[in-house]
Each structure stands twice: as C-alpha cells, then as structure tokens.
Image 1: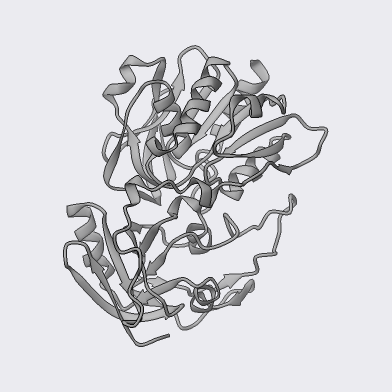
Image 2 (image 1 turned 45 degrees about the vertical axis):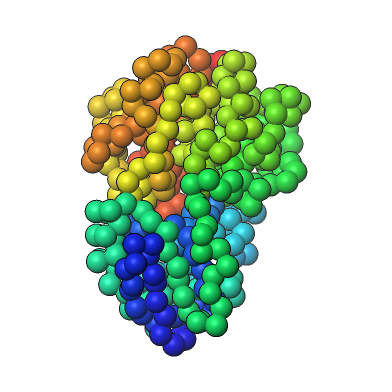
Length: 366
C-alpha cells in the first residue's frame, strides 16, 4: 500500500484514506455496489466503464484473485467478465491484508497494481454511500499522488460514448459451427451472457456496437441479444437505429440492461438517469406475468420512463419492488423481450436464469 490518499467529490467533500493498487490518480462518476462477494466479476463488468466504484461491504480482498486462464467448457474465464478491470478506481473501507482461497494467485492490491488501477482504503464507505444516496451520483477525483493530478477532471460521464472502448472491433465467434447462430450486439457484453447462450445449444457471433441490420442478417441468426454496457443509452444512436430495424424485422431478441433501454428507445419510449442507480446482488423485482418475486443482480444508472411506454407496442414485464421502476419489457405482438437486471448474474443469484429459457422458447416458436 502507498501513503495517504484522498477522494474529492464535485461538491467539495473530501474523504481521506490510504492508497493501494497503482500509484496514479483517476476521476470518474462515483457509484456504490452493495454486493458482499464477487469483486473480480464486478470490477471486470464493462458496465462500470468510466466509474469509480465504492464497495459498501466493509472488507474486500479476503479471498484474493484467481487465475484469469482458469477457463470453463467454452474457454471463457470463469471468474472474470471481460479481459481487464473496467472501473477507473476502487474505494473500500478495509482492504484485507490476508488472502485465503484455494484458487487465489494474487492479492487484491497486487491485481489493481498489475492493471494500473488506483484504490483507496480506510474510507468511511457508509458515509460516502449515504451521501450518494441522498444527493445522487456525482463525479469525483481519486488522488494517490499530488505530483500527477487527473487530466480528465472535467470528465462528463453522461455525454461520453464508451462503446469504442468496450465493444469488439470485428466479429468474434464462439461455440460449434453447426449450431444455430445467436448474434450478440456488443455494447459491453459480459462473458457470462455469452456462456449462457452457448449453454442453450447455440453458437454466438459477437458483433460491434455499431453493426447494421445488414451485418446482422448476413449471419442468418435465429436470434439477437442486445447486451449490457456503460453510459447513457441515448449516446448509442447507431445501436438504437439497428434495434428499431430488428423490431421491424420481428427477429427473436433479448435485451439485457443497456439492451433493455436501447430497445425501449428504438420503440419510441424515453429513458432517464436514476438518482443513484441499482448496483448489487440483492435487488427485488416482481414478474408481472406470474406475480413471483425474484432476487436479481443489477448494475445500471439509467432506466426506462414508465409513462413513455404507453405509446409503444411494449408492455411491462418486471418492476422493481423498492422504487417501482421498470425492470423488464416485452413486445405485445413480436418475439422480443428485455430485462433491466442481469439474468446471468455473475455475481449474484440465479433466480432469473429462466429469462434465457424464455428467449430460447421465442426462438423455437418463431
């Protein structure tokens, strides 16, 4: 660990602590996650791009970090959701000095150092979380060295297009060639989404975020997934246009997280920024088609405007029990569904894996 460090919020608040990870500075949108475990999956989720993440659970790092090349049956990393840490910085109350787990290969501190990500420990994360909850997310600067102030201190998260940073640049292929193809429009997809599609017996073609309907149809897919990802969905104009053409062509489609918002925008609905977002593994939602309550894993700062859905061909599928926000939609006539939460979880509960089964059924019956 390093010397003293501090977090400076845009409202002037200062939180002091001890630096760890890589000795550099960073600025970004300050958000919090309420999960107790799964920090390797969380920090490598591309939806966190451009953000400095505060863990509300008091002790982080006690089981260390596993090998990246510990792969599953599809040669995808088991414990990571992308190839690198996506957050710009990390905030914890207590960085564990002991890492104990059979799969541990390095400490949390060493992992952040290797990935050139700064962190701060010793922060009153409860106070910080209460401030964000009361006043909303805000930008902040994480300073580990006074000799190098962040060059992007005026970084505007809401207007920034993260897609070129989190999307593939050319098609990538997964699974067996003989299997039916599902195209994933990659706006920051997690490995676990790819894994769950492969487990359903499909192969996956992962396409860039700005792919056209012509690009998609060239692979003769049986279905399309609009993936999760970071930032304000209205910035993804090319993806929204393609989504509108997907709807027009009645292609079986599953939207996840950002993909849910993009489908809504493509249908003529509106989105808005949430006060402090939903980030954690314990978010309760109701499936309005069955009235079942489910515990979901979530990571998003924007949502669909409820009233604006009334003028579209979509209806509400899931609602958030805590704040009554829209957590899922379905097309009234076409095989198109979407959820705001993460049915693949990773990390989190598997209550909602049936969303993938629903998608598979739509493909088979269309």
